[in-house]
Length: 270
Ligand code: DGL
Image (cartoon, rainbow, N blue to C red; front, side, top):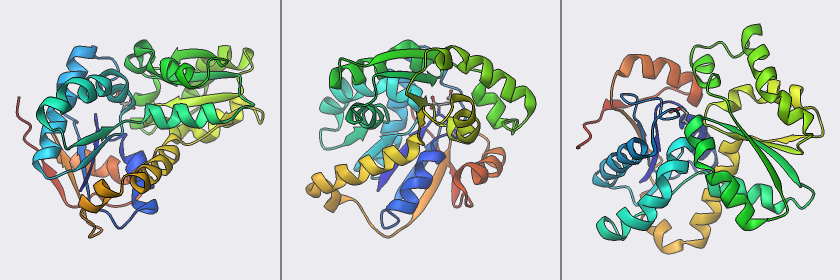
């Protein structure tokens, strides 16, 4: 099984690509809706939540876990990979969303100036900048935390004029800097893709990060055949949440583009 973990609903925008691109695998999705949002929490708390999620997904038989949440990828992934996994689960692989996106940017040699928008946790971590500069030191990076966007999207306000005004205000500086690409470093922002493209103009490359992560997963599995062989492939999936099931399933359907079923309550150990 492949585990997909997010603070709540957002990771479904990544899983939806996996289900289309690699429907043969079995997936477990875990949304930590008891603790959402992660985006304004401290690194220590985000790490603790992520560690519990890894324990849960491993106990369910996952051989590979994708942390679909940008805030958790930015604040917890490195520590999990470097400290926790080697000691506790040496055979388990956990990947995040930052590296695939950094690689996509770095590959495009025409890009010299980019913008990044995300939650406070993601932007404050500076992990996107570090990963991109590691691959290409000639790129100028401008980052802006855009914390109002997640609640607007979850309240289905993304098409309202008020949201467009807020978005425009957030993007003004990046537009003035004439960035050539804008990274949507948050699971929710693909819902604003059209409006963001309209504001930033045709010369600015804005892409759906879920698709990039999905392409990178395919590439990873092709390069790690021994791991691929261990992952069950019956085309089944199951969803877990840490709190309220009802609200999650309604909004989740909109995020995933299909019914969230079976959906169960997870008991995560402290
Ligand atoms: N999933 C989070 C992210 O991608 C957004 C929601 C939250 O703040 O937990 O950063």
